[in-house]
Image 1 (cartoon, rainbow, N blue to C red):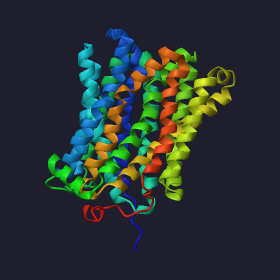
Image 2 (cartoon, rainbow, N blue to C red):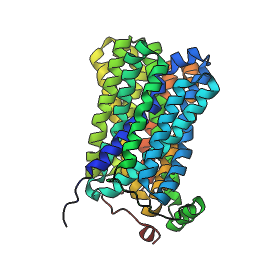
Image 3 (cartoon, one colour):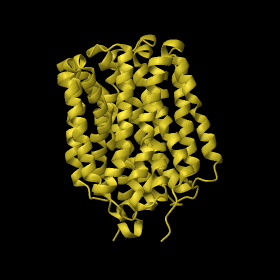
Image 4 (cartoon, rainbow, N blue to C red):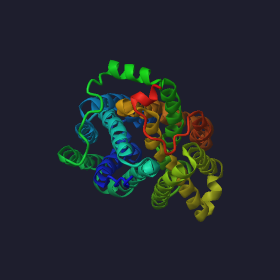
Length: 405
């Protein structure tokens, strides 16, 4: 059998969409304090603001996935990128807390749709033995997006202000135009009658309801680890750990460099030893790094190399997020893949609406250790829960006919 060529153009389009998708989503964590000060948000309001886009991403993923299966992925991918870009523009123009919350909700709708469509297209286009590596390479846009957000938050923000940063970030809409005009991306529908009731009937026929629930719980735990840690980490470095701006910037970039390494290596490890072993190992590495920051940050501050090593380890462990694209694509039939992936992953993100609030209460009750105890618990839960799912390394992607047997 001839070797299937790697779909480079598709990968680059999906990578650009995901990078700026994540950049738009996480940028608020770096701009939270000046936005809250100008618009007179309470600390509780700031915490909810961080979670609102995560909350609406579930709806965006579900609706966009169903529409993509019905009318074709290329057009809907373009519209999702355009939607989160519009939300970012409106964030920069917001004159009240209500307008700000509405704008962030729009960002979440676009972000939720983009992830599943991009990963689904790539998983369907690569050879099974390389699916894990390809998924990880695409998910590597995540640390690239956070690194760009760190540059914007630490270096650009003091020069131009938060509104200019947000408005300037909305130019990611140009990617949508390129996607829409590309003849190299698949545009055919996979389920021409993919209404919500029809999709639910196909899911029941495929008997993947248990897989949907179990994969969703895994997503809640793993994404809970990430969002409960990273949305508060810039604030923790500055306020609780008393790190200067320059050092905080270096620590954040170190974590993102580590995550990039973690995502690339995760794909290799997952294709070599299996999805479950890889998820467990990387999640335990995350747990050890978070525990070090929670309980030994003062000692780490006196030993910069140890602090740097911990931040890199935190990033490497976070690389297991790269496994979701391949894992979810391997669990669900082709006819409902976009909808099922979008619903599973993004409803798990929706559950993160309360994660920043939970961390805030942890900080109020027990300080830094209480705040970081939230992602620590999520990381340990991820390492255990992944074993309730089947091992899918190297399988042929299922169709509705094979899944229902």
